[in-house]
Length: 283
Length: 285
Image (cartoon, each protein chain N blue to C red):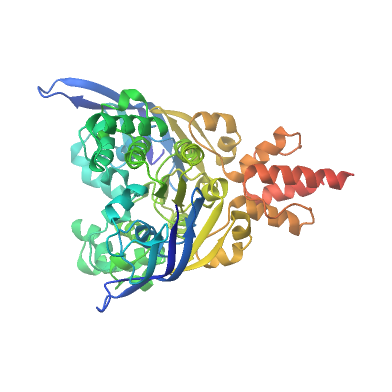
C-alpha cells in the first residue's frame, strides 16, 4: 500500500462577499487518484496554478479535502485526532528558506521540531547530529542561519524536518530561489536521504532537469492529474508537456528537434551521455 | 544615454566590525539599447551592483555616471534618474500596493507629475506591452497569479518610460511556459521601445537565449564581460565560481571529444541542432 494515497481528491477555494455568501468558487484540485509508494523519489510537475501546491498541502494535512479522501500511511487526513501523527509522518519544506528558519543557531533550528514533539533532550541532540550529517551541514552547526547561502539554508530546513523522523518529506519548489550550485546541493542531499535513509521524497519543481532521476513523475494541469510515469515515459511526450505549460530537459528537447530533422535517435533520451552515445553511433 | 561605473567599490556597514566588501573596483558601461545579462552565485554582488545603477545605494568609492554626469554630484536629480532607470525587484508582491492593477501602474507616472488622464494612458500602454489581459485591469493586484503580478510590477516601471530597465530574476518561481512568455515579452520591449535591459538571472539557459552580453560577477569583481558564447567557453572557470554553462554547451564539448566536428560555442538548442546536423553530413560525405 502506498504511503500517500488519494481517491477522488478534490479541493475548492471559496471567496466570500461581505455577507458571508459564496461569491466565487474555484476548483484547485479535481478528482485526483494517486498512489505514492514508500521509499520512492517522486516528482510533481505542473504550471503555476495547476493545483500542485494545493495537492502538496494535503499531504501533511495543511489542507483537508473538500471531496474524496487522502491517506498518509493509512491515516485519513480528515480525522482531526490523527493530525499530529500525520504531520510527523510527512514533513514539509517550502520555497523560501528565510520564511521557515526560526533558530538563531543552526543546531537550535534543527532541534525545534523534535523539541516541540516532546522528544527527550538527549534524543534531540542525537537527532540533530544525524539530520545535519544527512544533509552535509555538520560543519555549520554553531553558525547563524542568516549567514548561510540559499542552498545551505534550504538544507538546514530539510534537516529540521528530518529531525522529526518523518517517513516522507514534501518539498514545494525548494530550489526556485537558489543559484545553480545551491540547486545542486539541495538535490544531492535529497537523493542521499532517499537512498540512504529510505525517506520518501515528493519534490515539486519547475526545473525539468531535477526530475530526470526520479522514480516516478506526476503531471498536474488545471487541477487534474494528467500524466504519470517514469521520467523517460513522461519526457518522451514533448508536445503534451508543452501543452501543459511545461518543458522537457534541454537534452531531450535537442534530441526531439534532431529527430524532427530526420536523424534516427531513440525517443526517450534523457541525459547528456545518452544523447552523445546515440549521436556518435550515427556518425 | 548610458550608465558608466568607474572604479566603483561598495562596502556594507563600513568602519564597523560587520564591514563587508560587496563590490571591488568595478568598471562597467551600459550603452543605450543593449540587452545585458548579469550572472553570479548568491552573494557575488549582483543585487548591490544593480542598486548602484539607479542611485539606491551610494558607492563607497568611485563614480556612477549617467550620460557622463556623476549621479551623486551636486544638483543631480536622482528622482528623475529613477524614472529613467527603472528597477523591477525579485518579489513583485513587495512592489504592488494599490487597490487595483490600473491604479498601481498609474502611481509611477503620477509621481513624475503627469495628470490623471495622461498617467492612465501611460499605464494602459504599459499594461498592454507586458501582455496583461484587459479584464484584469480592475482586479486587486493581490488576486493575480505569480506571473501576472510580475507583469503588473514590470508595467508599473514601464509606465514611467525608462530608458533602461533592470530586472532582478523576473522569471524566478514561474513555470516554463510563464518564464518563456515573460522573457520573450522583455525581448520584445527591448526591440520595440529600444530600451537597454539589464537582466539578473540564475538560469544560464535563459541568459544564453536572450542577452547579447554577459557580465559575470564573482566575489565582488567582474570575472568576465563578453558575448555569451565567449563567456560560456570558460565553463570550467564558471563552475569554480558556482555557476555553469547551459547543458547544451556540455553536450557539444562531449561530442567534440568523441571526434564529431561540432561547434563548441553553440549555446542554444537551435545553434546546437544546426551544428550537429552539419557535422553529421560532413562525416557521411
